[in-house]
Amino acid sequence: MRNPEKETTLVKSDQAVVTRLDVQDLASIENAVNQGIKKIVIRFAAPM
Image 1 (cartoon, rainbow, N blue to C red):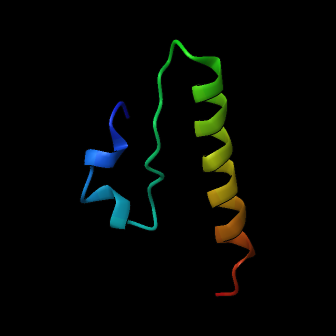
Image 2: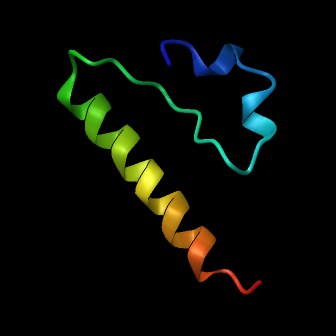
């Protein structure tokens, strides 16, 4: 997402990761992927 700071609905969801992503910037891509992985790990590690 180019401007995640403007998003108001998805940031409230626990099933979405809202982060800046510029497909021409490797650091941006790596950050977005790492945030997604972190969210998955935390979600599966949490007791149900």
